[in-house]
Amino acid sequence: MLSYELLLTFLLLIKEYIRSIFTWANGLIEQAMFAIMMFFPAHNKKEGEIHFEENHLRDVLKRVDELRQAGQLGFCDVILRVSSQEFHAHKLILASCSDYFYAMFNGNMKESKERIVDINGVDVEVMKLVLNFIYTGGIPLSNDNVEDILQAANLMLIKSLKDVCCRFLETLLTVNNCLGMQKFAESYSCEGLFESTTNFICDNFGYITESDEFLQLQAVQLVPIISSDELRVLNEEKVYEALIRWTKYSLSERKKYFPELVQHIRLPMLPPDYLVDQVESESLFVEFPKCKELLVEAHHYLLLPNRRGVMAQTARTRPRKYENNNEILIACGGNGESSMNTTIFSYNMAKSSWNELPRLIPERGYHGLATIEGEMYLVGGITTSRAEGREGQTELLDTVKKFDTEQNAWVNLAALHVKRSKMSVIACSGLIFVVGGFDGSQTLNSVECYNPVNNRWKFVAPMLTHRRCTTSVSNGNFVFIIGGHDGAQILNTIETYDVERDQWSVSDIAPMSDRRSFPCAVTINDDIYVMGGYDGHDTLRTCEIYNMTRNEWTSIEPMNTARSNAGAAHINRKIFVVGGWDGVSLNSVEYYDLVTHEWVRVTSLPRPTTGIRCGILVNPSSSEQKPKNKNGRGANCIIS
Image (tube, rainbow, N blue to C red; front, side):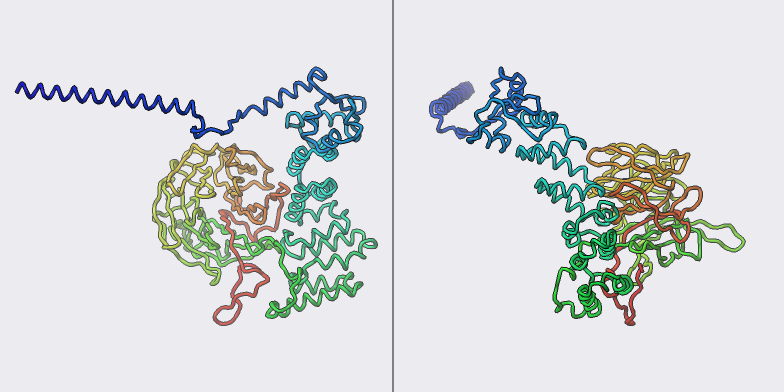
């Protein structure tokens, strides 16, 4: 037994000795490798890499600017004289930033040998700002100085400063100044600014034609505008009417240009009745026989649709970037009481008129509405039935209907799991979400999700807060539930739902300025527009925008009419707000113009309607033939 223990101890000692030898050898090898890398740098893999100090250039510029301020003591070798004001500078710095100074100091010009150089055509204050930009890269720009600074940058060939000025001018573009700014950009060869103003003019042509600046255009300026494929207008009638208005502003001087200009109007794109009633009767067509050839071309195009493929194709037979006049606004309202009159309407953008759609049976109110891929879904709500001599019986609904545009009728779908009203209904990621609401006894936080593919509802994660009388929008894979009532108080908070993670959050979004029950909302890019509602004391006119990037709310122009429980939809750069409640049901309609930032009243609903929910449907273009149904007659159209 003793010999075994001795043998085991001996083996352990040998093991530790061998381990120490390996450790010592490994250390020697590492030292040798380090020595090789030090004495033979060619084997260093990072040899030749360039390393930068990120603050170096900034520090150098700061130091050079300090030397400029010191004048001759700062190694300045030239003085720029503007009027009687002198500015010390370094030729090297000036020449590196300006092709103008590079040519002056690098050639045989007399200024290259002079100590003082006179600069003409530049204001003293402007020169001071330009020099500061050359030495620091920064400049304060305003409406008052940007034009003078850009002119100086153009004179002294300082491209970087010119680019800064042009980018600033782009932020100032409006429908009232874009034509003048385009001319300014062309005068100073600002290609980027010219392109931006041209695009702005094309995108906002309908607004610009109403301005006095449009009427002052020269014929040569009008041609590239009215000939553009990118002209964004509601229809070709607007382009034709703009040309007639421009021509008749000074008829005796301008009518000679009409034959050339009218060639850029796409007469084949006009409706036949407009062509006959408005265009053919125009005296300018009678006065210039050459213009009648254009009318014949338009008649052939409109009367012979089957031959359009073999007709000579011209720019006049090519549609412009017309606004979505095949998209129509649907307003679905009601308070749930039975009525012989429908509470569902469609809005004709071109005619600014409302049409009635088939009424719902039974009528419903406090419902929700969502659209997915051009199909409109109506969800839940309440209905009130009245028997003769009895009070109305109110019933909560779990029914869901879809509007069939071909049959012009409502179709039943799978019902909700929970009957509810005063909830939010919103489409997101190809699904429909029904959020919160009221089940007749309590405010809900439950959420149901509908899949149009399999016509099934399922529960998903509930909200963190019980809410009813909310509004909702979606952006990407996120649903936003806004304001509402939790059963005890009106809220100004927003909850967000991540569709992919099936998770709610209430802390990510800053609260609104106002508490709002039954507001309405739309989302445009990264902005959420919230309008109206009830704060517990008053029906609101106020509106505010939430920017997702900055996580902040800002107020915008209030609506003309205070309203809650109204509908809202975004179409053609306008936010329509329809009907609602202000102590009584409202039939008024207005839109917020995203270009002019003003509220504009438009044609009212056929009758006062509260509980409006809005959506956008796509209608076949008016230039296409209407589809035929089985009996060969044209199918009903939801807009006319």
